[in-house]
Each structure stands twice: as structure tokens, then as C-alpha cells.
Amino acid sequence: MSPARKPLPTALKAAESAAPHYLGHRQRQREKLLAAPKSLADYELLELLLGQVLPRRDTKPLAKELLARFGSLREVLLAAPEPLREVGGFGESLAGHWALLREIFARLGEAQVRERQVFSGPEVVAEAARARIGHLKVEEFWVALVDNKNRLVAWERVGRGTVDQTTVYPREVLALALKHQASGVILAHNHPGGDASPSQADLDLTRRINRAAQELGLRVLDHLVVTEAGHFSFQEAGFL
Image (tube, rainbow, N blue to C red):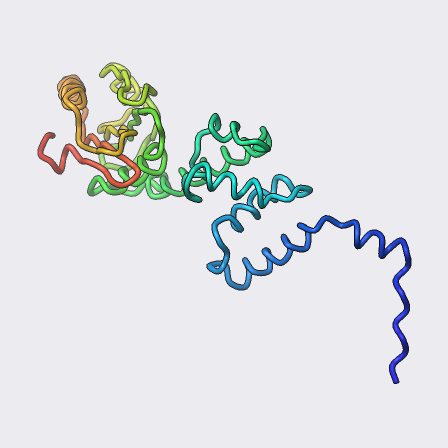
């Protein structure tokens, strides 16, 4: 006959009963993540992510509120700082964590560009541009600079504008190319509205940059217009 279990000391029982209920819940979620990650709902993944920054808080209500506000896990993770801060409980510590996540996502999308591989088509730069600026709510203009073997020399932002335009001057692009001793440029900008079709302003700017580049012996290899869902290539369309 097994000996009777000794009752827990009063202090230990009190500590157990006082422990926040979400700690056990979070531990079960972690175990579930390791055993069967696809079984976790979006809000549960978001709970765990929030819990990394807010370990002493029940993060389920905030996770559900963020999903209700932005519509999907992707939209929550890619949301801009201003609307995120409008959600109660989303403070500066979380804003900093979100900035870190966005930068990691962008660099993952830019990985092939950063590896200085030889570009044989627009897809690699288009993927990098979509990762970096495809989700933004304002236009940004970026330039990939390449050497004479079409390997990346630099990948930099030239301009940032509004929801429907970015002011970029050919001299800014060419000055950047000369600074890095590049022999070719690939232009890229985003259309926040979701339509990658080039505007008349896009066509005019591309012609102006191309003419100025030719005078300096530089090659304009492509101009890419990107959105979250896809891209338009000037080179593939026969505009360059």
C-alpha cells in the first residue's frame, strides 16, 4: 500500500492558486507549436508572439483585437506603426518588436539580391522590391545598382512620396550609380493601390532616366512596378 501523499505546504498552495491562468495556457500553446504548429489558429500564433514582449500579460484579448482590426495575420504583421498604436495596449515595446519583424521579413525577401547573384531576369529584384515596399501605403522608389556582370553593387531607396506619387529626379539616380561605380541600374517603385500597371508619369520618368543614363554610358536594365500581389516589368513589356 503506497504511503499517503503529504499535503502541500500552505504557502506553496497559495502560490499555485495565485499564478496567472494564462501562464499554463501559454505553456500548452508552446508545446502545441513544437508538436503540431499548423494546428494553431492565427490568434494563438499572435498570442505567443505578443507574449514574447508582454510575458506578464494575458495576450489573447489583444491578439483577437488586432486580427479584428486588420483582418488577417499578414495584415497585422505588416501594419504601419501609427494604426497599431491606436489599438489599446499596443505600446512602444511592441512597436519596436514589430519594426524588427518587418525588417527581418524584408531582408528574407531580399536574400537573393544580397547574395550578389547574376541577374538574368526581373524576378529576383521584383521579389526583393515586393518584400521591401510592396505592402506600403505610400510610394517609395528604390534602385538596384549592378556591375558589368549584372551582380548587385547596392540596393538603396531614392525617394519616398505619397499614396500615388514619388518625386524622383534622374540626377539622383545617376549620382547614386556614379557613387557606387555601377554600370547598370534597375529601377523599382510600388503602387499602393494594388494595380501594377505603369502610369504616364512612370513612363515619362523612365524615358528621362534612360536618356540621361545613356549619355553617361550607364545601362537601365529594367523598371519594375510592384504591388503585394505582383509586378510589371518595363523590359518584358518592351518599353526598354
